[in-house]
Every structure is written in structure tokens, then in C-alpha cells.
Image (cartoon, rainbow, N blue to C red; front, side, top):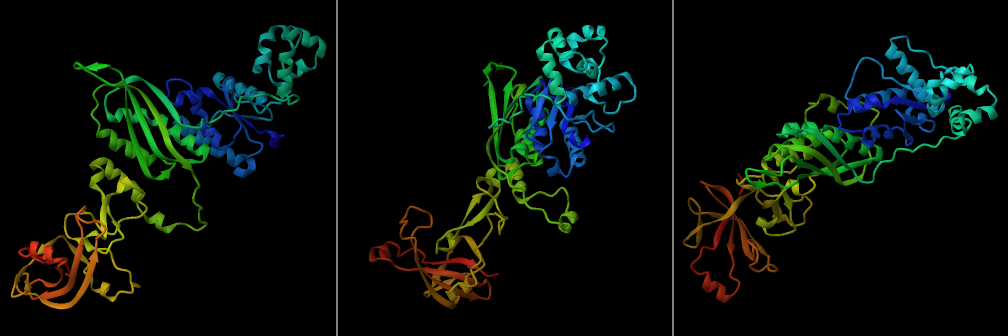
Length: 479
């Protein structure tokens, strides 16, 4: 009989008290959909049908332990007392046993064992409660005694609906329930019931919404990429200025996630940057961008690196997003390789938060000399082995004396020339522009080895126009 008890029942009162929402909403019970697709609210109880999913959780007992943990997290109540829970092989029977357990706890008497259906009192079945006085005059105090009465006469006295409910409780008739369904899009509002004046209070009030979002993501096997938090102002006008009814904040993540810890950090950073002009009395949370979530396969071996690392450490994209939220998107940049032969155009700096940051950048963003991307070792051009590791922020014009470039003294040409002609397709539309150059490796005792180039004449008109301009430039260093 124990193996057939695949209906589980919990009182809604505990969920509603611990959820911190102003009114009951189906989102309070989304956590149960992670365990079974057949979840229903029946009068004052939440019921889960587990006949088809028990083996997926390793049996009934491991599943009950996981359900208790999820229930405590949903209720924010981790107490030593075991949760009130009833099991049975039908929904009405599970509800009746749950009522009997709650009644015993309220009276302070020992909790009864799982009673068979025939021994349950009349008040535990809703359909029999209106007829309890008449049934007790007939000498009936339990379900079994009611079933022992002649069915035709009993039907005339209590009605066919009550008899059908009794048959459903015994499993003789199928029971129709309204199964809990998840919405296609996550949109949830929360009426605070009090004015929130600053970011910390708003973030605290958003916790039930974030938990509901996590349950929704887990039940739908999705992960979130964008999150929008909207808040409603309690006032319409302040200091003579009209206020918008709603304001919003949209945050995006570089990688899809189901965890709320990183989203809470991002919300905290963004909300603290806001200027709160009026109290907030209502919040709304949306997930406009989600995608299917495929959890990574776990290894059977222990992860020693994870055990030795600091539990407070963040992933690369999480660290970047937190810094971007605190200092602005333009404060965190990374280099991006470009398909160009001009050294100054081989890479560009872009905001990391603007795109997906899949891996850490190879160099730090700073106005100091920039590190050129390393050349591929298998490159066929041997000249690339002489490229310098560092480029100057801007090419430095060199003086020329006796047809020799000078940089803290005359420079001796050690290698070259390496001829470069590139950028002709851009003309003068970009900063780099047309590059017609001869590169050399030069040296003197003061600056050491440097990378310089000489501009070559393109046309006679260009030569006349640039006759008095410097044509030698230093662009890279090797130190």
C-alpha cells in the first residue's frame, strides 16, 4: 500500500505565510513543477502526483527529502520541525489525511498514523461536511460507515455529487483537477504594501520575484539572458514636477544563467546608481530574453580546483558585468583582433559588456603603450618574427639629419625594409587611412632597438605637398 501512495499534500497556509507576497499567486507553487508536471491546488492544499516521476528521483524517500528542501527554500522557513505533509493513493484521501494531521497538531495530541480511508472521520471530506449531522443521526462517523449504507437511499439523501466525491476518494472514479501551468513568458507583479525609499529596500522587496523567476526557469528548463525590473511611483508629482507612473531597469548577462546570486549583484549595482525621486509601492519583474538551458555534465571525480578556490570568486563574465554596472560600460574594455595589415589597425578596443565575454582579454585596457597581438608561429612570412611586442599609442615623428632618422641620437638601420601598402580601400575616411610605408628595425645606445618606418611617395603631387613634413616615424619598441 505504501508504494501506491503517490499523492503528496502540503497546506497552502504555510506557503502563503512564508512567501512574503501580498496576495496568493500561482508563482508560489512553481517550485513543485520542477519535481512533477502534475501539480494542482485542491481547496486548502497543494498536491503533487508522483507516480510517473518517483524513479527519476531515486525513489519516494529521496524525492521527499528534495521536496522538503525546496519547500523550505520557497517558504524561507528552515525550522527543525518536519513539514506537515500527507501521502495517499488519491487526491481526496491525501487532503483528508493532511487535515487530520493539522487537527492533531492544533490540539497538541500525538499525530496519528496514516489511517485507512474507512477510518477517516466525516469532516475530513468536504463533500460530506454539509451532511454530517444527518449522517451522524444514522450512526455514521467514518467514511467506511457511509459506504456501508444502501447506495440508492444514500444518493437521495446526500446527492450524486457527494457520492462521486466519495468514489473519487477511494479511487473508484477518476478525479478531474486543474493542473498548474507555467506561463509562456515570465511577468510578475508584487504590491509592496509599504513605500520603499531607497535601493536596499527595493532590492529586498524584489526577493520574492527573483525566487519565483528561479522556480519558473527551473521548471521550464530555461536560463535568463535579460531581466527587466519596473517600479511604480507612489506619488504623481513631487516639488512641482510630474513623475512618470513607471520606471524600469534592463540588465543583460553575457551568458545564460539560472542562479539568482549574480542577478542580485547586478541589480544591487544598478539600483545604487539610481536617484530615487519618489517612494515605490509596486514592483514588476520580466524576463524578456530566455533560452533553453542544458546543464553541463558533472564528473564522477571530485573537483579539487573548485574545492581549493575561494567560494566568493566570480566567473569572468560576472566580474566584468559587476564592474560595468558600477563604473559604466566604457570603463571595462578588451582588445579585439581585426583583419588588417596596418599595425595600428590590427586590433581595436571595445566595451566588454556590449558583447559576449567568453574569455578573458589578453591585455589590460590603458592609455599606455599597447601590446600588439602575438603573431602566429606558423606564419609563412619570416619578417613577422621581427615585429615588436609593444606599439606606441601614436606614431612618433622623428627628426632627420643628413638623411638619417634621429631619436635621442642617430639611428642605425639593422633590418629592413619591409614594404607595406594597405588601407587603400578606405581612402581618408578613417584615422588609419592609406599606409604606404617601409619598415625597419633601428638601434642606438640610448633607445635600444626600435621599430620605425618611412613614408614613401605615392604621387608627384603628394611628394610636393608633403615635402616639408617629417617622413620618418617610430611606432614600436622592443624593451
